[in-house]
Every structure is written in C-alpha cells, then in structure tokens.
Length: 262
Image 1 (cartoon, rainbow, N blue to C red):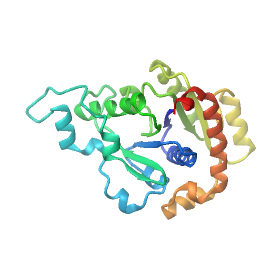
Image 2 (cartoon, rainbow, N blue to C red; image 1 turned 60 degrees about the vertical axis):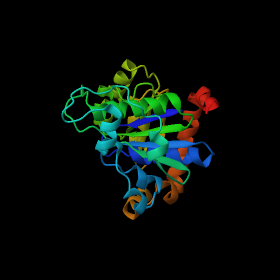
Image 3 (spheres, rainbow, N blue to C red; image 1 turned 90 degrees about the horizontal axis):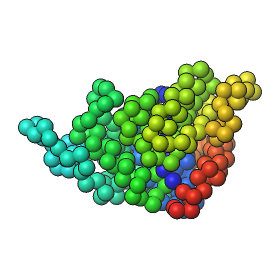
C-alpha cells in the first residue's frame, strides 16, 4: 500500500503520517516513510533520536549523487531522465522503531513545470517506491499542491488530505481531489485533525462526503507536548493513537487487495 499524506501547512500531516507508519510497523509490515517536506520533521515524529537525524542529508541536496546518476553538470545541459534509483531507499534510509526513514527533500525551483535533475531524481525515486517495493510506503508531502502539479505522486494508491475545521482546508481537499484524479488516483480521503467540539464535527460532516471521510482526530494537548519534548506522538498520546488506529482500519478495508499483496 502506498499512501501520500498531504494538506496545507500546519494541519498535522506529519503527526498523521508518522503514527500510521508506526501502526503498520507494529503489525509487522515492512514500512518505508519518505519525508518530502522541506522542513523534514517526519523523523522526530517517528521517534528517531536527534543524533541519527543530524546525520541525514536529503537526497535532493546530494549534488554529487544527482550528478552521478543523471550525468548532469554545470557544463552539460543534457541529462538522463531515467536515472538508476532502485538502490537508494535501502542505501540512504535510516531505520528505527521498525520504520525506514528516507528523507527526500523537495525541489526548490519556482514553477510547477520544473524539469531539472533534482526533480528527475525525486520523481524517479517516488515512482520506484510505488511500483517496485513490497513495503507499506507513506509519503509525508510538502504543504500545498506543488507536488501534484509536478506529477511526483502519480501512481499512489491513496491520497490522505489532512484538514482542520475551516473553509481553507475544505478548499484544499477539493483541489487535491481534482488534481489527484487527473493523475489517475481515485482514492482521495480526508482525516479531520484538531477537532475541538461538536460544532467542529458538524462542520466537517456537512462538507466532506461520508465515503471520503476516514475519521477525526480531536484536539489533544499531548500532541503539542510531544512536539515540545521532541518525542513521537505514538509514544506520547494513547488517545490520539487510538483515534488514528481506527482511521487505519478504514484505510485497510478500502485497500484490502493492496494489503494482501504486502
């Protein structure tokens, strides 16, 4: 199963992505969590020690590797669009708590139509993760819709759009659904995060079709405390984990053929 977790900034994408990864690992699945966010906070949310995280260089920052694989250089404007990447997940990932973390980074080039060596590497690695690995793969995407415009997430089994109870989050969900369907991804689901009360619940239920809503994660100060402590929410808040576990159960039911393959 291959899942891309997306949404606007600050909604809690990383918390959801990391907890799902830990839950699948808890069941004994091989799990690869890929951080495609320039802030690269997924490792902390997974519970990785800082000494491991400090040693990680995002793939898109590995200039020598990118030049070697794409044959791009300052004096060569031509480069491979299908570089070899199959060894990268195992060679450059770090494993802890049963989850392999691959920090991909992002392409810092304006314009959704970027075609550059970094983008070629990023897209090829994601495609390799989607098409050729038996792991459960969870992508913690950058905020916004840039990755959809670049097509780096086509071929995913499911997009999970993390939203808050607010009009801007609802608009983000609608945009992601439209763009994902253009990429051939027809499973676009929603997790509502930071839900405070019945008014918030009603707001979500009135605006998200029941078949798209995976569930709600209620506002929990323990999540903020985990962030302050640099700890994984999975290890810090039993209540939040149980809510996300119920969401995972719905994911598994909607993707049963994928789970059987895994």
